[in-house]
Image (cartoon, rainbow, N blue to C red; front, side, top):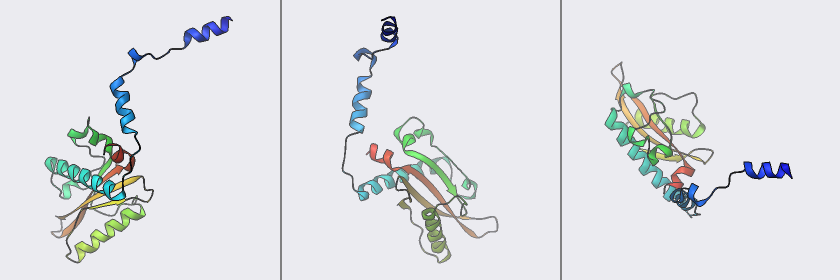
Length: 166
């Protein structure tokens, strides 16, 4: 009987006064089941990617100096939903050893377009695991040798988080 009394008094029971009701309501709303097509998902991620690129360009131009930027986060995203959506923002100026198959294919396609004078266009792709989305924004910059080189601003999103904020 003594043991039961000790256990009962050591447990804390949550009451309505201790709960953030608005936060609970928002969490329930965020977890509602919604039917979203792949096209809607990719359009939303593409729009978010364009926003990130615009914020990046406000802080620095896409040039050779931007090469190697990794895990960049815009000031505007530190406390907002954009910060929760972003997994990683990287500027590649050469094929990275850590590229997955899809990333390597995208890089090679941009390289091909650059070598053949074709227009470079932003792109949105699902990565191999299907749980990550990659928005790429290619750019051409003048390298130290005076020629043009390829650079890609890559924005990685969590598919789950993009859906949650739709």
